[in-house]
Image (tube, rainbow, N blue to C red):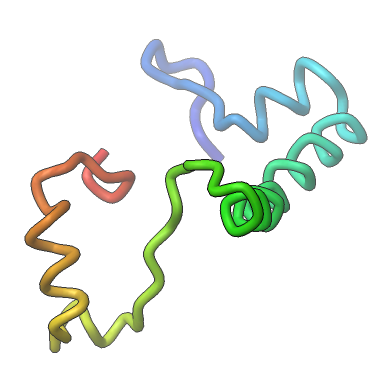
Length: 85
């Protein structure tokens, strides 16, 4: 459990939702958030709505890059990522 008494403590978004809105509302918001990518993909395929689409590839491609993964890395490797935060 994080030490909330430390000055640099920041609650996760989930913790913040629970504190601010209560458990039921937090669960509803998180459920909607977790399912939005399916709706965005449907809109992209139907009306070409642009969104930050995830790239899917196998984990083994990190150690044995395929041509597709290598192209993705070369095109986007300098961009910030969640892993780099």
